[in-house]
Image (tube, one colour):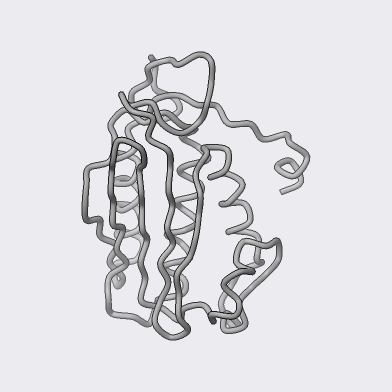
Length: 184
């Protein structure tokens, strides 16, 4: 957290397969939490997405972890709805958990803030704060829709600059298949 706040964490953009990253996260979480299902519906995500793999993966990992953590008692699956347009790559992560009280929605993502109905659920109130910072490094936004007792929808919007060039801005674009260790 300190490194992030002091500007010591920088995005390292490259091309990566966004769909593969999401598929791997889904496989991991569906194995780790066999009683709770995460599914993905909608458009296929870009195979050549321009962004920082590590910060995108960290952000999505945190959003999925929160969806699981706050909806463990729900038999409904967590769903990632994906939409890809010429301008945007959109992910809506929808759970059916405890939700966030309407009056507290504006505070989500503030450092150390935890919703009043999160008592008894492990957390420190920094996950969404860090997630917002990582998404901002990729020129993405995060907003929430929620109602207490009815679940939460996290809406992540990345820019899609066309021709597979999305996310982080950089003067040099190096083709890269796969994750951060893939060779161009």
